[in-house]
Length: 21
Image (cartoon, rainbow, N blue to C red):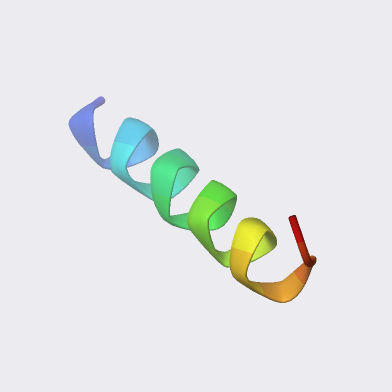
């Protein structure tokens, strides 16, 4: 599903924002 991919990208973005690169 497209939603699954969108949620995955959103989760990855949140993880990057929470954790310092």
